[in-house]
Amino acid sequence: MSTFDSAPSRRGTGSLKWDKRPELQPFWVADMDFSSPPEVIEALHRRVEHGVFGYALPHDGLIQSILDYLNLRHGFAASPDQLVHLGGLVPALSLSCRAFAEPGNSVLTCTPVYPPFLHVHRDAGLNLVTVPYVYDKSQWVFDWESMEKSVGSDARVFLLGNPQNPLGRVFSRGEILQLAEFCKRHDLILVSDEIHCDLVLDEESTPHFSALQLPEEFAERTITLLSPSKTYNIAGMGYAYAVIPNQDLRRRFSAKQGHTLAEITCLSYYSAEAAYRHGEPWRRELVSYLRDNRNLLTAFCRDEIGNITIPDMEATYLAWMDFRPAGISDPAAFLEKQAGLFLSDGRLFGAAGHARLNFGCPRTLLEEAINSVRRALA
Ligand SMILES: Cc1ncc(COP(=O)(O)O)c(C=O)c1O
Image (cartoon, rainbow, N blue to C red; front, side, top):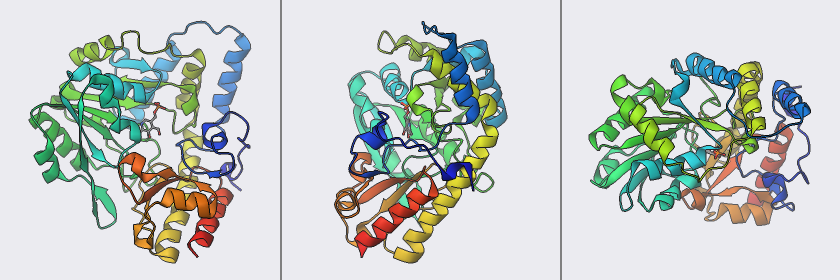
């Protein structure tokens, strides 16, 4: 019996995932059904008991926990002034567009991708250029030729997710180096969203290579966005940070915040600190549990059904499934009607015929979902 075999009921708790369509079993938005590590819950209790919730600043303990994390997990020795604290990663994507491009310029990203990547350009009056990833054997890779053809002289920013949501790719050192060189050649700022980087399912075979580990020459054009939010299931608390080693980039990024962002809450700071400081044993157990969930789902699609294409998912608890070989062109609608399941519609990510399934849940729930899909397909 694993800690992750059971989870509290979330119905009626104001959960986006569970309460938006209460008539369906939810496997959509990217949070998990597990309780956070006990140390995170205890830290929140302690802070709540203090009873005063005025404006907060990132306290020394939080900053030290981030510096230790960056050192340990990414081999990066940051200084506190290189961190920009934020209430979330999505605002940082938007801010990057506003900070590093002028209206009429363009921003580049590859698809399918987490939906806000396809919309944040509008906040800055930019044009969006998308280049599809290509499926090579059993995983998705960059299409370097199309990227070279698509990048115009007005391009300023490249938005990357690594690990990639929804493809589950952990890009290799070689791929990230090649991307950094592409950005340098075309004078682009590389914005690397690494929110899923502590959810790599097989760290030995597919280690995460952070943009923070790129050679020094790329630091002047790289910003890395991180948060403990996905890993420790505290996304609703609202805390993230950017690591921007280059002073000029950092100044431009921070200056564009203006008055567009809300204050960050004291509770989110304390939960983030506790997650980084005490969460590692819990995280290891979680990753092992998610790996088994991934294996179960992959075996179902590949060995039993055969005509749902699923890539080698190297990270996250999100599975990107292509239902077109099964003759299903709108899988989200099909699964809603025929199986009572709520999955994310691939079109939101820029790819029809696909659906994204969130397997960050107890195995029994995943097994029930698999049974529902099996019955619907039959
Ligand atoms: C790649 C990626 N970036 C950012 C986010 C959301 O970040 P935040 O809630 O901090 O805005 C998600 C959530 O699913 C995500 O998958």
